[in-house]
Length: 218
Image 1: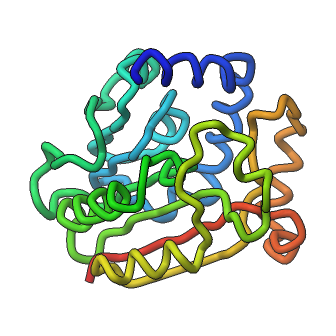
Image 2: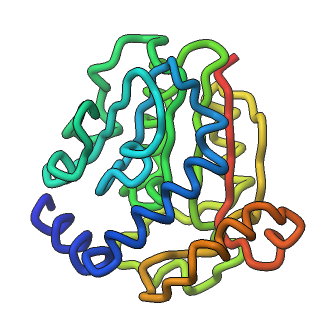
């Protein structure tokens, strides 16, 4: 499985690494940093090549991934947890201010794994802390959702909201349509178009095919 993960990352993202990194800097600066206190602790689930966790500003930054090659992609000062996210995390209870994940939950093998992962997230985040979830919304993608071999769990914003509430989170924000679908199709629009897009939320329902769900621990 580990070798397969490495091949998948290389096939999808090797030619896009620099562009993806610059895109994520824009996303963090314009959207996601708002949810992460700069003096706090943040963990990224499925950190991949570190595009989010390398750019977000926080006193403590942690990346978790099953692919051991992620470690080499993380910036100095970012801690790496090489493990299955559905197993118990070596993180103290109520020690994180925020947990972030992007395009990750759909890759888990089944809903039971997702439920266990969310239970760990609820345990580790502080009261009032956030879980920020970005992911493809199958409601707007249809068959294209399955174009990726390792997509297993079909999710909509509504189904994710439901399981988050059942786990014990409260929902702060739920956008069915936020970003376009994917950056792995070899199309690299200029970054100014992304910056403009983020400033015009009234166009998100026209082009967005990924949800953004932000949940809090009561």
